[in-house]
Structure formats: C-alpha cells, structure tokens
Amino acid sequence: MGRSPCCEKAHTNKGAWTKEEDDRLIAYIRSHGEGCWRSLPKAAGLLRCGKSCRLRWINYLRPDLKRGNFTEEEDELIIKLHSLLGNKWSLIAGRLPGRTDNEIKNYWNTHIRRKLLNRGIDPTTHRPMNETNCAQEITTISFGSGAAAAAINMKEEQQEDEDHKMMMIKSSSNYGFQETDEKITSMVIERCPDLNLDLKISPPHQHQTGGRNRGLCFACSLGLQNSKDCSCNSNNGTSSSNNGTSGYDFLGLKAGGVLDYRSLEMK
DNA sequence: AAACGCATCAACCGCTGCATA
DNA sequence: TTATGCAGCGGTTGATGCGTT
Image (cartoon, rainbow, N blue to C red; front, side, top):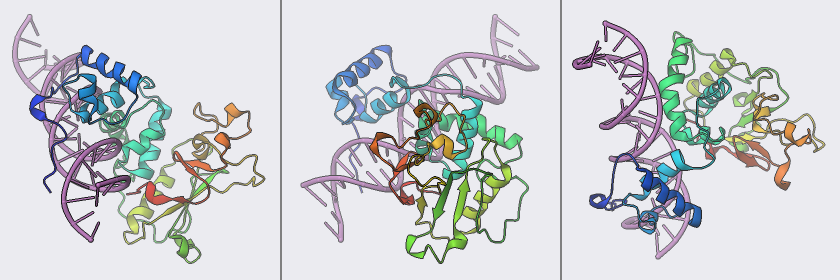
C-alpha cells in the first residue's frame, strides 16, 4: 500500500539508548505527558523515531515499572493467563502491575517455556506433550472449586441453545495449577475449530447477589484470595465495587454486564 | 587467560487495527 | 467506500554477559 515510513530513518539514532537520551525523554514526558509519539522526538530534541521513544519509555523508563526477578506467583499467573489468552502479551502484562509485555514475552521465551517443557507440558497448547486424544464433548469445565466463575459464552442470541458449548471457568481456590483443568481448556479451544469465536464473557457467577460482594478483584477470580494482588482485602472485605462502578473487572476489563469477548481476542 | 557456546533482554521490524478525511 | 496516518502489538534480532572448557 506504500505507507510512508514512521520516521526519517536516515536521521535517527538506533541501538542502545544513552543516559542523555533517557534523561531527555523522561524530562519531556514529565512535563508534557505521554502521547503523540510521532512528534515527540522532534519536540524533545531526540534523534530517535517515535516508536523507539515509546518502546523505551514503556519498557524501561516508566516510573511504575517493577524491576527484578519474577516471583513464583507471577510465574504461575503468567502461565495461567497464557493458557487462556495465548501470546497476547499486552493483555497478560495488563494483569501484572509493573511488568511490561516485552518483559513478559522475554521471560516466557527464556524461562517459562523451559519450565513447562520440563514438566512435560507443551507451552503452546498447555497440554501434556504426549497427549493425542481430546475429550469428546465438553459441556462445562471447572477450575477447581471456587465461588467466582467466569462464563465464556457463545454468541448471545445462541446462548440458550449452546449451553453445551459454554465454558465455566471457575477459579481454583488454592491457586494451585491444575493441569487437568488447563488441559480441558485447551481442548475446548483446539477441539472445536469451527466453534464460533465471536465470544462473550459473562461476569462470573456470584453467590451473593445482594450487591455488597459484587465485583471480586481479578486475583480472587483466579482463586488468589490471599494473594498480595487481591484488592478485595484491602477494602476490608467490602469488595471492589470501587470507582463507583458495580461492574466486574475481569482480565482488566470492566464489565457492567456482559463483556464483549472480542476485546480479548482469544486465539 | 582465551575461546567458545549459551542465555538474556533491549531494541528493531513489520504487521494489524482503528480513526479519520 | 477507500486511502492514509498513527499507535500498538508480537516476532525476531543482535549485543552483551556469564559459565564452561
């Protein structure tokens, strides 16, 4: 289609960023905020392309970044999210505060892939390496026992007819990684290639419909009630119907009712 | 101490999706 | 409806560091 290049490559620096460049970028964003990456380099006096500036800021200079090793809990959360979302690194990163998509992608490729392979699990499908057969028909799948459950439905107009296709993903109560459950999740996705993927996610079923306990945090939805990421506890158990919304925050997406699953782009 | 191989990760490249004219 | 511009995403690359021989 002949798109113009994102920048004048002949007049831009490439490769590792210098301290001075970092300082310039930080100073500019502190005073002007993020946005308009294309014009930023010129305005900030940087001989870099806008994409490069954006990447440097997001992956390295942002003040809220968490440096250092991944915790075991983060490992398992990444694995779990990857089993649900695939290589949607930005979505996964959205659930790990202080971590970037690039960092998670690198960490996946260098550490977690190997970890899963050592466990005998295919890191792509999250299924045992030697498994060849899949379940005949999946009606409902459950991630252990948990009050919170996320229902991934088919097209809403077909909802009633297609209960047999509905996946109920319940969070495990102990944050244990349940291989069989994960296997089943993969099976559903892999065994039903003609499954209509124009999906919707319904908020997890809540036993307490009175309103006070609506809106479990994501950590709890995954069964991480005691996790440091749990924001329910921090609210003294008053739940996270925070920000004045009563929507459910699933995978970081506020859902007032039914959440359009297209925004998650399940592979 | 030097050479080599492997692991890590910052950065780049090309593509896609969305907004807009 | 189509073309264009832009931001963002995911795959890949290459420089660097570290461990081993």
